Image 1 (cartoon, rainbow, N blue to C red):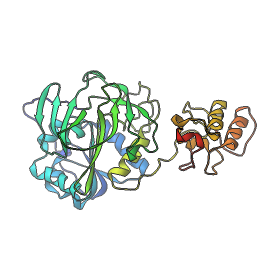
Image 2 (image 1 turned 90 degrees about the vertical axis):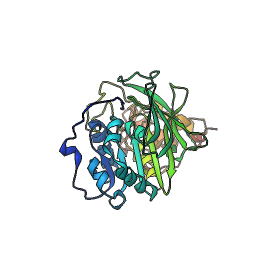
Image 3 (image 1 turned 180 degrees about the vertical axis):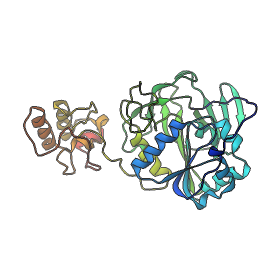
Length: 351
């Protein structure tokens, strides 16, 4: 979520201004203009990923050498104008030095606008001074949803980006005023995802900055629309069509400079087509995969390994079929949780 407009007097409240810095893996910016749901939901994600975090305000950014306390910093959705107004030149340099020295910057929607060299908001151009991304962030995308409306939209994932190695070709995610990213001439960044409904232009980008890394995200994958595990009730009326936290899992691995790990299974054991049940349809998909029929859109198919022997094959299909017709099996088919790693079956190659 992001909006840009001129305002008069802005009152900065003390509880947003200064926090007691202790240090953590990720600093979470919390100041005027930040979207509370975007903060809370990302904190819940980090807890799930077991990454430490703490909130800090604009004075904390301005007064402290961030690289001495954090491995990265997260700027949430909200209103980037306030970020620009509250963080002075010293604070901007603290952010740059954190990233340049090997740290991470994660910008979600407004946080992505804030990191860009320039912003085109509703046809008005603004210069932004942080300049991690040498390019323009343009929004809102009326073709998806005019500001301040929000909808679920499709993003297409770049299969050549290592962040997407465990992801399906597309994701359905929340759009709420986020930007399209366009690099300046001869500036090269990597594309994680594109807007399916807007000329397939860049929706999520990642790139190096000095010795560190930057991840800029136009949509809101931190929000779990039809689940309460993000501890918010925003957009609960919308259909999430599956979690995007798995995408965040690998993206955060990348931006922190870690080896990219497979997200832990949070699906239903035996459910390979993600329809919230394990039945004969899933067994047929597994049998097809086992004999080499292309079922790559269901891959890597971790939930198909119901006997947890490290592979998905006809044995798993037989177990699922047995459970579907009421035959007792020693395996918890239909329960929550899937193996974290498997050997993909032949039909996952896409041939």
